Structures are given as C-alpha cells and as structure tokens.
Length: 331
Image (cartoon, rainbow, N blue to C red; front, side):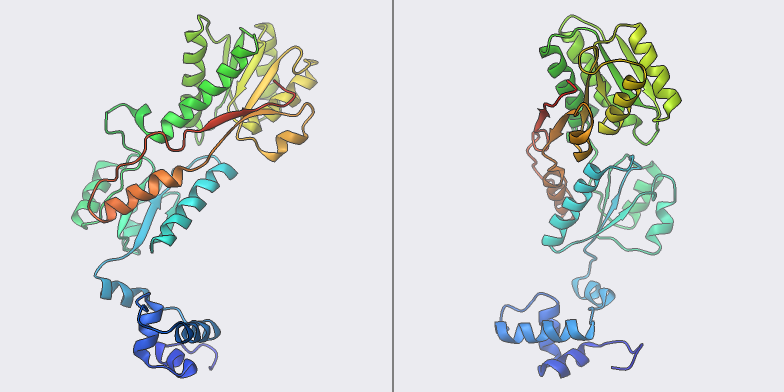
C-alpha cells in the first residue's frame, strides 16, 4: 500500500481472499456464520494493513453511537482513582462501548463545545451538571446516567460519598480501639480534594463523637513544609495522640514533619493514612493505612448501560464499600 493511502474494507477483502461482505460481518462483530479460520484471516489482514472500520459508518448502521462520555471531576491525581477509570473503561469495552473521558467539560469548560465535536450515546457525569447542560442533553436526546445521584435525597446515600464517609469511620474506629482518646484529622486545603476530605472528616468526627469524645483538632493544609510544620506544632500543643490523615501522601508528609519536630511515631503520636500505597511500606516507621476493594466500576457500569438502554439498573448498595486497615508501625 502506498504511504498515506486510506485502507478500505476492499483492501482487507483482497488480502484475505474473501468478499467485502465477509469483512464487514467480521469487523462489526456479526460473524456467527463465518468459519473461525476465515474470521482469523480477515482479522490478520486488517491488522497487517492497519484497517480501522469507519465510526461514522458503524453509527449510521446502528442508528446510534455507542460512545460513553464520562465527565470526570477534577480530583487530585491518584493511582487509586485511575483504577476506577481503568476498570470502568474495561467493563464498558467488554459490553461493546467506547469510553471517552473529559476532565473539564461541564465543569471548567463548555459541554456544548465538546458535544459539537463528539456524538455520545450516553453521558455519565460524576458531578452534578448545570441545569442548562441537562436541558441541552435532553434536546439532543442523549440520555444521562446519573451515577452521582441519590434516590433518597441524602447525598451520603450515593455509593461514592458513603465510601468516603466510611473511610473516616474506619480510621477513627481503628484508633479508638487502640486506646487513644485525643484524635485529630489532617485534611487537604487543595480544592481538588476538598469534597472527599470533608466526607472523610465527617465519618471520623461521627465515630469519635459516638464514643463520647470530640476531635481534638482538625487541620486542612497543603503539603508544604511550612504548613505541615505549623500543623504538627498545633497538634503537639493540644496533646494529640493520633491522626487520621486524608491519604497516604498526607500521612507520609506528617511523619516527616513529626520527625523534624522531635515527635516519636507511634509512641507519642499515631498516624493512619488511606490508600495503602507501596510508598507506605518503606517509610520509617512504616505506614498504617486503610485499604479497600476498588470495584466502583461494578456499580457504575450497570447504571451507564441501563441509561443507554432507557431503563434503571438495580445495583447492590453495598458494592464498593469493603474497607480494612493494613496495620504497620505508625499506628
């Protein structure tokens, strides 16, 4: 093939020694009647030529796009969050959908502009859309999988927010079981993590108060050396015995600040993080952390597919809420 020439289905048919109709059936997954040997010949020829079926043509045949547009919130960068997006993409791919992510449309940039370039079959926003964007999707007849919505009206009934709340519960309960009574929460001042931090703080506070106590301190800081030094000094002045940190990054930074301040962890102050990152195993002291089964794709995939098909999915409300503490030296 000459460089730059667009590969067509007829080119694949000629190389495989089959008809163009056979190529179409194989490439569009309608090959039940095609012998396995012939199917492999077609796929091998397509791979050799670099043939990709026309998305426009496939959409015209189906009458509808199978693109899922996921509007992702501007969370703080996190490997565990990437697990969610990767799992969701894989599960949707297995069901014949193409998953496209946007980290800005509908929040910091215009959804209308993106929809002028992309024609999704369903939109899955992971944050509340503005009313004008919802009206736009309705006019375009694009269904919305409201994965962030609570049916009861209580935001903590959504699996995502309930999970964040239970992270704080798990941290505080573990520390209380160890016998400490003066517990602090170290959250983030970064707006990208503010909502998650607030839900984790709520869980920790409610757990401590259920034990007849109060949080001794609550700090929301960035990861700068100055901010952490000030936070650890305030905690020492308040005789804080243990800290629920927003995540392992904050817990690791707190360990460093405690060491600089001459505070021995865990003898004088215990620290527990979230995410169980590999980093925590090699800190000194090694980091105690909350780990979890990251299966939110099992919750969101059925909701997205159901929205595409014009129905409502019944999802197990307890999916994605399996948490446990990995105990190491810091707490």
